[in-house]
Image (tube, rainbow, N blue to C red):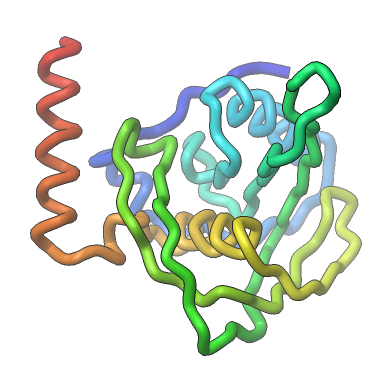
Length: 175
């Protein structure tokens, strides 16, 4: 397994629409494993393939919400290949979102509280499930990446510009 470089905004690749995964081969399995390693090292709870420069409809999620007796997060890795949202609730939820492609940027985003989704597992098996809570938020956030959408696109123009300005300032300072 290897760590992959995470693309950061304003890289134009983040605005690409990803293509469906067609081959469930060893290259896909390696990419999935590398994405998990990259996400855990970042650290993050979700990562879309486009964020590591691969325009495929693939994302990985591990909320790591529970901890073991030693206080270490319990890993529950989930793979979503060619995910689609079949339906969403009318009730919404505000969540303070961040993104590995926009380091240290956070903002409240309103999304449907519950979604019914269908996707393929890493072996190609089809799954369908109703998701809620943080998992529903994370899935919607990562699926946005597959369409070339960032969480800041859900904000007002003023908030979006403030976040981008802060990000550019931080980069200039680090350089």
